[in-house]
Length: 512
Image (tube, rainbow, N blue to C red):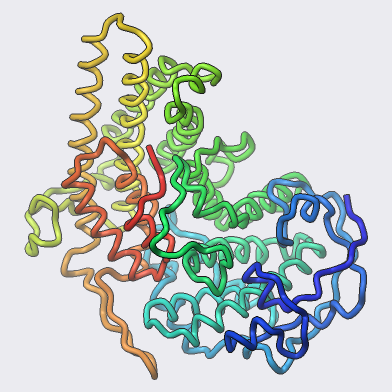
């Protein structure tokens, strides 16, 4: 439902940071006080706008897309003028964008197709997009945020916030003009915006409600503090759903990459996967990756139902999931994972070697995989295997609290779970070490103004973020392995310039 309301007269810089603007032109009071670039959308001079009344009724900031809603008809588009003279140059200096594309985005020949992320498609859509499109602005915002983080350059980071705010405005227009011609570009843009929110998680220029570093974070099992203000993964899911609902021709490679990241996000957040997203074969998955994908979908459902185990006793029994059912499903998934590892093709198998640089390993050993793509899938396998056994162990512990029957058998099963978690965690460390071997040493990258070095190339680092978050967030993983993996995730966060990852390393964020 739409309605006419008086639009916010604030600058898009303040809108992007979600703070109140005094609407003074050409530079508002907040931007003048903080010496920020004050960017304006001149189309708001028109007066009344059509917007979704639901967003305003809930007191939420306007977003380019409502989570998981289906738009049945396009509404009148907004007229967006060219940026004012006070806006940042668009796009930002080509060197910044090229720096990010070359160092953070895999080329087609650099990684197997089955682990290609949505960013692998960026160059294609950048070439097709208009100079000031939401996609180009989003790429400029992300690349500036990364460079600003890695070089501690506040000017570059400042520029990224204004670019992101303008990208949101452009995407809002694109959504209202949604068609089979622009949906791919909007899909990539939505995923970029989700990544930007993670990059800028701690930055007060983007998040006005950021707490002081000394204040304690609000912990819950699903890491709400990292994504409660980030709806862009839901935006991407909505776009995929609309493509399917309207019968538009699919883009198999892009849709597969987007869906794969969504499945991982759902599992982290404790959300079951929507039925229409569950079958990976419909999105191009095949072979061992498809088999593991189906287990991960089941794992996301188990994770969602197991959240009741974190509730106090009074809340557990009001839940529809019984601990015994959760333990049984976890055991079934554990068996499926064991079967997966035993039936992979020969070219997916790996060898064990001592590492020439023992400091880069947990126990001096490293698994040598065919490619980093194969290694990434094995790392995902081991991370989800740890989580499944952790859920089973927690369910068994709750069962023991609720009944004194067969306590000895229950205790033995918990010990089996702990032993298996310890073994898998060590194997995970050995696969992760493959990414830190001397052959993968990241070169120093020099721009005209900065020189940057990494412990791990950012492209490889991106393959490890999700599984390492799972591993270090599992209470039952042995502390030595967790600490080793935590140190590696700290290096990964630095390479990627990701503030959310850094916060997870330092303060935690999820519980499994």
